[in-house]
Amino acid sequence: MLPRRSLLKLLLPAVVLLSALGCAQNSAPENKPKSTRYEDLTALFAEWRAFERPPFIAGVPDYSAAAMAKQQRELALYQRRLANLDPNGWPVAQQVDYQLVKAEMNGLDFDHRVRRPWSCNPAFYKFVFPEQSDTPAREGPVIHGAIDLWTYPLPLSQNHAAELAARIGAIPKLLQQAQTNLVENARDLWITGIPVMKQQSEELNEFARNASGSHAELASTIQASREATEAFCVWLEKEAPKKNGPSGVGIENYDWYLKHVHLVPYTWQDLVTIMHRELARAHAALRLEEHRNRKLPALAPIATVEEFDRRMNAAVTEYMAFLNEQEIVSVRDYMDQALRERLGKFSPAQNGRRAFFHEVNYRDAVVMRTHGYHWFDLARMQREPHASPIRRVPSLYNIFDSRAEGLATGMEEMMMHAGLFDKRPLARELIWIMLAQRAARALGDLNMHANRATIDEASKFASDWTPRGWLPVDSDLVRFEQHLYLEQPTYGTSYVIGKIQIEQLLMERSAQLGEAFTLKRFMDELNAVGVIPVSLMRWEMTGNAAPGL
Image 1 (cartoon, rainbow, N blue to C red):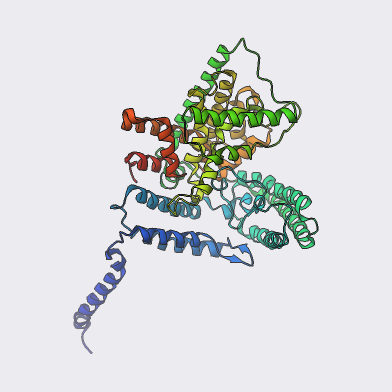
Image 2: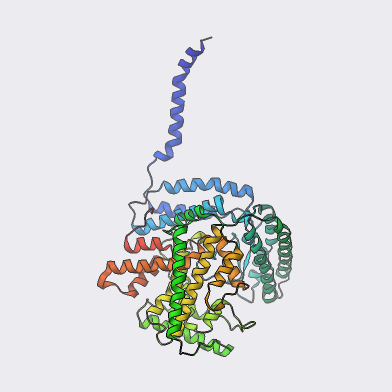
């Protein structure tokens, strides 16, 4: 037998060779030339969207611990594939698409590392939605496979009834799975999730009255799903006393989410400062408007069904004429219809009060039509789909919020400054009231996620700083909004910060164009880019990329 030292001398070259081969094999993907083909990005995007959807078992999405651990492991492969694309030589529009895909992957990464709605948020398991959202996709984390009841026209066809029976029939098994998945200790998310799930039971009951009719199988399925939902609520209430942990993501995680998912170039602390400034500006401006209007009679709210229908339709006519005659934006035929279809129905006051936005809408019907830019966006996405397959569909994780909510909110003040309310000065007061409410509720978002305020405290702050007592702390709206912002970090700030980013973009683009600038050109360029983060809009419209993109 050879001495040990001699044996090592013989084996060492082989070990070195094997080690080198192993290193070469492991590093091969890194050394492989990166693809510069945009087509490889669109192909990866299609695969990514299929991967992001969890596996379904008998119609039930699988959010079990094992399924989520597997998805998290495999996510890294998609991120490496994206990193192996080199977009630097592409046109800016295609580089923007690359950043959108990257942001979506970061969103799923954040969900696995931080948010984990499937294991801490009972409301994540809400499965039916009777009304359309006014944003490209529903706000907040929404479970895959969720049913948009509003997409099924009444009376139901036999095919639709059968389809709904199968889909609604998944609810009992889904809620059984939820009881195993929900293992975390986030008290506020748990407590506020209970009324959301109770609402599902009520919505199923309402849908059964309106739609099941002679469809016996559907009626039976809805009843079973209602009972399962109610049993789930009983279980949630039983477990609630055990929940005492925080629900916010924390400031460091909030900053990461702003930068890497929603592509907002501000930090948590920046947003706190900005929201306090906007809250003060709104209140001060309101007091000045009230002083100017002090000799005018107060606006009387709509009192009858007939008055509601007349004033709402007249408001659409007035607003569309203003957009066209004042050359604010290129007006399309579908825009008028998009607003008229969303006028709603008259709702009498309850105990002398209405929901916050009804308090505004019933005093001046034109004001809320400006926020209705949401419906223009949705109609445009359907009628004039974007050339890019990546922008043709809504971005995941509400990445669209700074543009969708920011522009809808921004149009309120922008149209006021453009002269829409010159003949009705009291309507200007309503604009400042709404801005104050948006800034106050945004501070609730920020403080809840910093774990410096509970949802009760955030709701009280929003109520206290909304003028005229129009957002009572015991109202459904204030609680609904703060719950949404707790579920979806940064959403509560998107209305105001998106508005501010668009104002900055307007300034920058007008400086670029000089005398060639017109508001109509700016708005048309903005619409052409699509409903994407404002930081990416800025890059495409001006050529100036934000740091880090």
